[in-house]
Image (cartoon, rainbow, N blue to C red; front, top):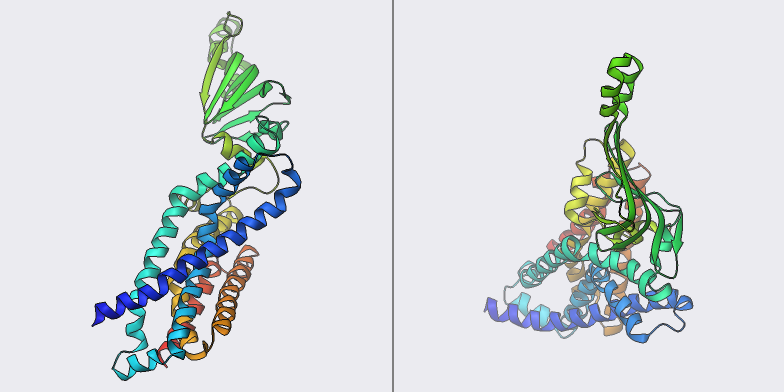
Length: 377
């Protein structure tokens, strides 16, 4: 009996979930298209759709909780109106028992969202911004957005170039520098190209200087001076061949560099594990640690809203879902209410008014408690 009931409920819920998710994704994508349309005149239609497609993983993580609310409120509201819920309760089946299949579905969706947040969303968010500059608005010349900026490329490596060749898409007068303590390695190059995680430099020179060793020169005798100078200049590479090239591996890809530094609105390219490592970094200043904690807990809390909102949506659907229109309106109200509370508590966490973990989890805990109390009453 239980398995038959579970299959019946899932047959009611899953189609609404899929249609709702598709609808919400379409609404978000239209919003992105509308905002960007002023810069898309003349852009190939296929490239525009490709750019919109890169938004989908990040949008899915955001809208799945909204789709879950609709998938619970609309079918269960109809079942309540038709008397099916009363019939099951008369047969000794409680609302808690009806939760079983939909809670399992919510857990699967939460796991799917966590997977997207870890493996797909960081890449797709970076690709959205990279594709926008390199393929749509300034084809092949997206790196020009980084001109004149010092760009951290990960693991202590920094990139700077003051000029850009718009014909070849190359960086001009490139400088790469890497610090390890008081020792610096600086690479100068006439030109450079940036593809994936590789920076190819042309006509390069490499200098490694140990600034700590300079202190020893001040007290060195004339006989010791030559040997001390060798300790200062650890490495000097100046190729004699004109047009010599070398390739430097970077911690950030070209897309990630554009996503993080091309404009003031940096994209979220942190995976869940990277957010955790940043949060646990002992060298972070207190303010940055608070931001890292808030980001990490938020990346966990939002996917788990797929479970939490089921607890609240089911009793609301059974009690108040008397018509399809009312059910739809109620599902929107619950979803919007959750996101308002989530964003408000996050803002309070960002301002230091709440601990980061409480700010991120407040909406989940509050909605779960209210929903469970309504189910048990």
